[in-house]
Length: 187
Image 1 (cartoon, rainbow, N blue to C red):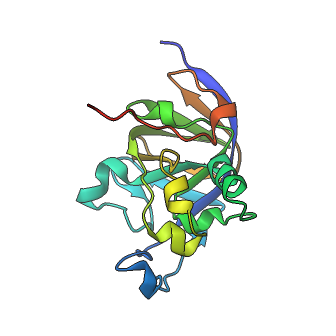
Image 2 (cartoon, helix red, strand yellow):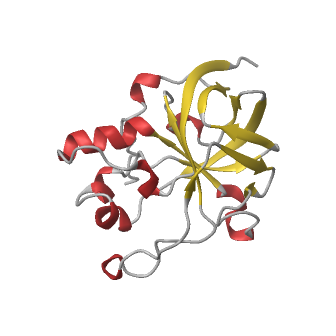
Image 3 (cartoon, rainbow, N blue to C red):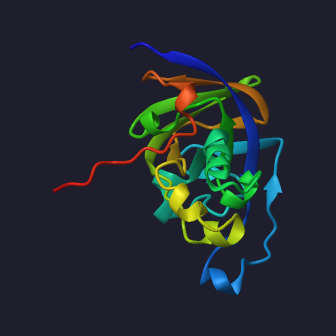
């Protein structure tokens, strides 16, 4: 099987032991500790050590969310907001340089430093109404189709912030990293 290597940058590794966005957005987010780490330990079938989804049965197939930094930059450009904080999206792994939508249903690998983690792309990471409250009005709708990919970790490893390589079984177009992918509606 052919594999395609793409140079990427892991810009952020978000780990939070608790949910911050629950209830009604108008009530405000919970004040929970959230860290942007230099490295994050990933455990196969469980998630990122220390994260709110780690080992939760309901989230096994979606314990790690991978998000394209370019998506948020394109949303900010479209809405005219200026820079938006990627950490407020609450996505675990923020990458630069990768188109993510084709990874749904695929196993792919992220290599950083001397470690590699294999993830299975599950479903799209749909945005919630909190995006309008936490980032800017209109982000919720603009983020549809480019909210990232919810993944299950297949192997143990450590992800490190900085230069990395994404190894994909399918061809990707890094120039499309910020584009929204709209699924056609069934008649």
